Each structure stands twice: as C-alpha cells, then as structure tokens.
Image (cartoon, rainbow, N blue to C red; front, side):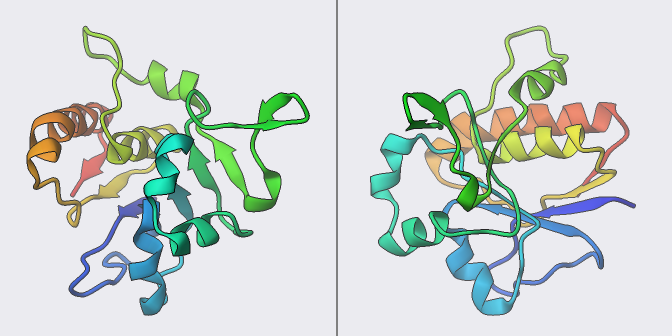
Length: 167
C-alpha cells in the first residue's frame, strides 16, 4: 500500500512501516538527519518573512540543493527573480498545486489550512496515498490545540471519506 509517514517520534526515530515515504517540515531535519532518515519530501510552508526566526543552520540547510522536493505554498512563498516571481530551482523548491488541493475540500465552508500538517494531508490525498501515518504528530500547546488541531481533523475526515487509512 502506498504509505507516507509524516514526522517521527523524537524518542525513537524510525520509519515504522517498511517502504513508507517520509515527510517532515521546517527545522526538523536537524533531528532526523542524525538518525539517517532521508525524506522523500519536505514542507516549508511558513511565509518568507517568518524565516528570519528560523535558526541559521535551518536556513543554510533550506537554501542548499536537495534531491527531494521542498514544497512551498505559491500563494505566500515566492522569490522575485528578474522582475518575476518564481522558485529557485537549485534548491528543488516546488510549489504545492493549490488549486488541486483546494478542490479536495468538500466541507460546506471555505477551504482552510491551519498548519503544515493540513497541507501534508491534502498533498497525500492528492498524490493517491492509501495510508497516512501521523501517529507521531503532536499538537499540544494552546495554539496548536485551539487553532490547528480542528483543521487537521477536518483534513483527516477528507482522507477517511476517500477510504484512506489515517494512523
């Protein structure tokens, strides 16, 4: 079954389902790389103006060549290149297909993405994954519990409606 594991447990980092793709986000490469976890995709959803808050090591990693896509939101994340907006190819930045992701939303209110995990679930649905392993995702601080978790659960519902198993 086509499976993706989103994040990992920091206490015993591993790919739990053999053959699963591994996705993570933001500065978590600093925790996955020492264990040899090689991502098949990375998500950098934060707006460019928020990046100065990231650590210098993350920015150095982000702006280096990758052999996997680094997905960004084209509605909020682009660079001016010769008077036009685009994505630096040398870093393998890939715009998320936002129109296609938005079209997956079947709830009776406007589509929403409250956090990176929402984008990751939508992308997993779009790419035809049959299993989404999110068992190590932790939404535990006040902001995550009140603003992000409800939207993540709506996207989990979208996956379930399509017969996708979410762990």
